[in-house]
Image (cartoon, rainbow, N blue to C red; front, side):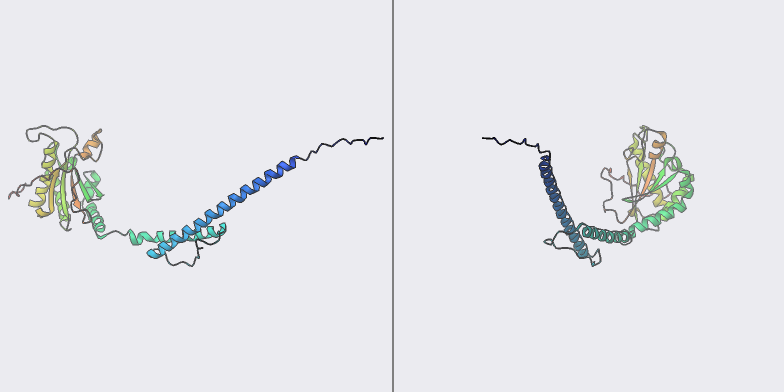
Length: 285
């Protein structure tokens, strides 16, 4: 009996296609999941944009828009639609913000008064500002007029120089035109002083402040109820005390013009009690 001859089996070289097909299927599923997640995020963006626009419309900030937003339970928004919504919202918000400063950031009457006062003082004290004897600064308390020692006092002396009284007279004349309160502060550098009259910088700074205050009252007719005096010694510097120029800037008398917008107790937290002012001397300072 003849036997059937077995044919040799051929090796299948294309079995890799099975693994490759599985890999492609998994990769396709991965991108489907990623796409679905992205669509959910875009829907959330659409709901957020709608909520922001509705809130601004209720506050009267944005005009009523013709842009239609999807409801929370609507179908996912296509990316192009979400992008259009975001562009519209951004354009509207930028146009509103661009116009907002004219309405919301316009200067208050108090700020306008500070700017007007500063402008007037800059004209009246042009020479002193050019020499560096006077500085002007706007702070949260109001306008500060800084009289530097180099232009108004001799070193270690509380008496104002006779040639500088005219500058103080111009300052007092301008301040008298405005319904403001004025605090006059004496400041020094950190170099100790110890004389028979001034045991420390506290006494020197306070005496300089009361000297200017007395001039305002006795010579320039300023109401005492609108004035106060204080001495801060070296403890409120405007510059470092490590250099001669820094110490020179710290030796000063500050005339602080209280803005009406400042708090009623405009004194600084660390401020020492105000120095008492003796009754005006009939013959002047």
